[in-house]
Length: 217
Ligand code: HEC
Ligand code: HEC
Ligand code: HEC
Ligand code: HEC
Image (cartoon, rainbow, N blue to C red; front, side, top):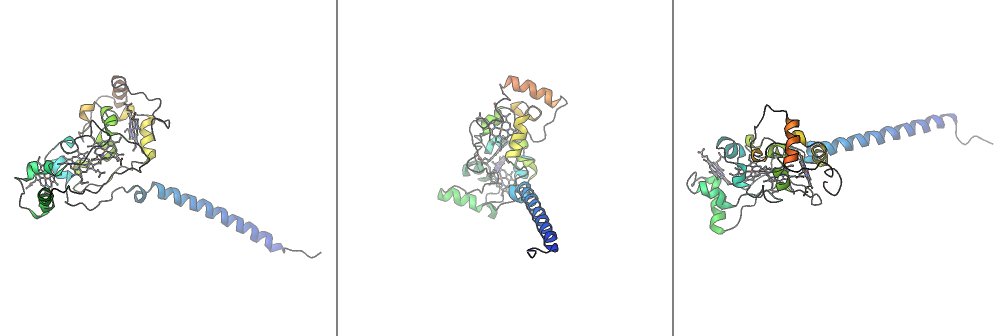
């Protein structure tokens, strides 16, 4: 009987299998890198807004507290975005003729809310509640970065499952007294972990359950 495969076929077969393996592993690596990349998580991406609103100016230099504009952050699931009249409380007097603020005046005249584009947005299937976190002493800066230094807002934290779980597994070092959550550059000489453990007792935070599927993503 003649040989069906010649000698070199075996070599080719090995080579083929080897290439396939390299291809699969390489493909997997690229996919994983993509999943963690800034492109995928939108980090650093600035979206077009109806008015180029500056957090650096308003929250940073002028020192307006986050809650003045994101009024429901301590009480509801959603932080909320400011309605036109919140801006108008100042801009009916300051910069009241400027062109950049024309969309604001039009919104007031025509009673149509400004349509702010969302920057930090979770997929619909993920449940998130601001008040629960803020009342537990988790600061805005932990999840949104140094917003008070951003002329135009962008996402500086990935806000993906990995970040949620990293904190849920060990929340203590991320906690602070709840009345200080909006202070962007707060620091303390006290040991953060020790302080966090104490606050977990005071705020009745139960670490068990934060990483199971019922209580967390
Ligand atoms: C507590 C008062 C206050 C509120 C509320 C406020 N602003 Fe301002 N805003 C100011 C002041 C003060 C300036 C700076 C004026 C200057 O430097 O000449 C300013 C400047 C601006 C400018 C000029 C560009 C810049 O940032 O330097 C824009 C645009 C603007 N505000 C938009 C808004 C919008 C939109 C809102 C509502 C979401 C808002 N502001 C709410 C006080 C306020
Ligand atoms: C004067 C009003 C004002 C103040 C004060 C303010 N914000 Fe905002 N914030 C806005 C407006 C208007 C938007 C929507 C436009 C934008 O994204 O820049 C916004 C958007 C955001 C967003 C993006 C939400 C999303 O998904 O689109 C975050 C996060 C945020 N603010 C955090 C903060 C934090 C933290 C502070 C305090 C350090 C703060 N803001 C203070 C008016 C304000
Ligand atoms: C534990 C993380 C975390 C903390 C702490 C946090 N946020 Fe958020 N924030 C988020 C996530 C996640 C979203 C997107 C929610 C969604 O898409 O359902 C968001 C969305 C927002 C939005 C968009 C509008 C909205 O209501 O969803 C604003 C404004 C905002 N945050 C402001 C704040 C401010 C101000 C603070 C501090 C007082 C704060 N956040 C604290 C994670 C956080
Ligand atoms: C920096 C810390 C931190 C980060 C980041 C964080 N969490 Fe939490 N989360 C907490 C703490 C602390 C609690 C417990 C609050 C309590 O028990 O009072 C909590 C509780 C929860 C709960 C249970 C709330 C309830 O209604 O009982 C959910 C759901 C949750 N987080 C979702 C998320 C999601 C989704 C993300 C990511 C987008 C996230 N968390 C990011 C600290 C964090």
